[in-house]
Length: 365
Image (tube, rainbow, N blue to C red; front, side, top):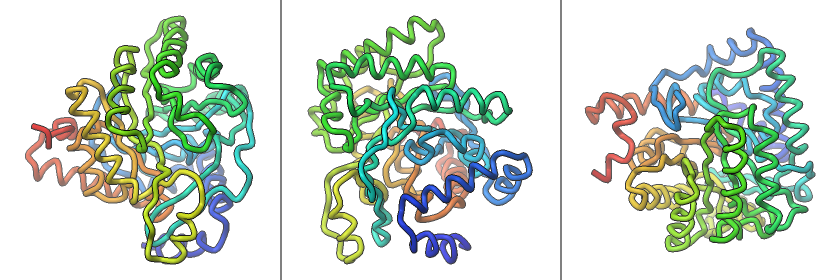
């Protein structure tokens, strides 16, 4: 409640990207000491709802989605806010500034964000150096960590396989699982990598790095919500043949409706990817489609519009083993995490499941 009364209105007075930066830098300062982490935990700690996915143990299904902690600068803060896992990035092989500012916008009445950030990050080598330093200082979380990998803007799609695999190689020791982002709408031509020839080449190149490393770490593929069902299924079949370990559904959307609120209409008129509540319906459709088409054999991470117990539960019973949120943290504040997990524990009990894993995909049975 204090966040809704004080925090959100104050952040609403300043530019979205600046507000994001202020929040993240505050977390980065707090995570540096056990006192700071314990302080956050005292307010936001979540109960446990344990499950195993991708050969990894999670305290509960909910993680922070990619894009919030691009440079992995607050990794140890996320468990203190109640998250059971975190995904940093997107990281590209080469440093890049991203698209011109302003490039992040809020549609408050719609609980939606629009961004055209363009993979702004210092590049894989700089991220690696930061992560080495973090480990040396004992600031590595005990929870699973995922890295989101994107294509460098200056690289062509024909050069993308080497670009992705090089980043994977550099970050290999600094993530428990990797998400291959071929679906952001903010890098020109990137979504073409979801097509058959490009996708096969990217996955084969990344598999070669994994084979060279000799220890199996999960590779996940993140899909666009704007693909047709037919194209989505085609990409899924290619990915499964190429030994993909999981799917993330979904990235942001370029589709729009016309909101009634003038502030929201202004935000929706901006180019870029839309996330938050308006994305929920399509993300849920994609999760259902993936679960049914793969006959529940490939784990799914559901993301898009999760901001309540019911939206999280619907993602899980539709087929998501893990879930993520981003926009809800902006609009609802950090307490949304523990509220969702407490609610999921009640849902598990009410539906006579012995654990959360039994609930995954249960609407299909």
